[in-house]
Image (cartoon, rainbow, N blue to C red; front, side, top):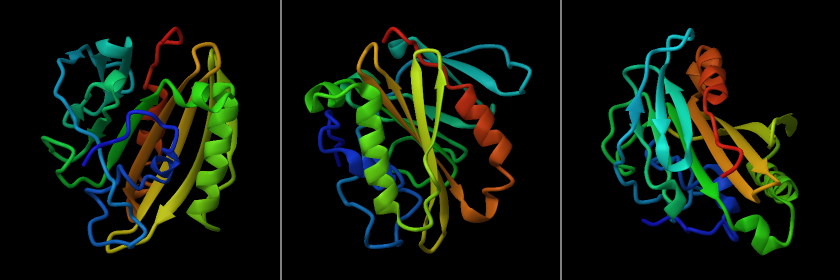
Length: 211
């Protein structure tokens, strides 16, 4: 299954439907069958653990980095070619392997331009539509700004044989027109226990503001 390289019609990603395929097999029929991207293995530089105890991995293709627990799997993919980055607690070798805890990330470099909107406005329109589709249990949208990035995030559950708790983060850069979509997921029963780890990993996901 192949991920669309343009996000023009890609708000379904914002509901986590394409990227949660491994963890939600047998769940709601609402989960899309247009699922995931082809993940290509890339070299990733690992550096000394920071104070958080997480290991920092450079993402040279996008001049970024991500901090993860030492025993997690990282499949960086070719993000600039439309692939998906996966970082999971489970040991996986491809996007087709099942996983429950971790995050996925995609980069949209064309959607805002194609829509004729600023990246932040484009992100907000997608977030509102995704929040509506997520249903009444979705949280309110939260906005913040960090440097060049305008961030929108919200939480929502996915029902199924193994209920999931999902956090969606959209980071928009109006200067470059780029939108980054990050989806964190874990089992609903572990959600509270993994709260601090989720926040550490999201905070440690560094992006180049010039890209």
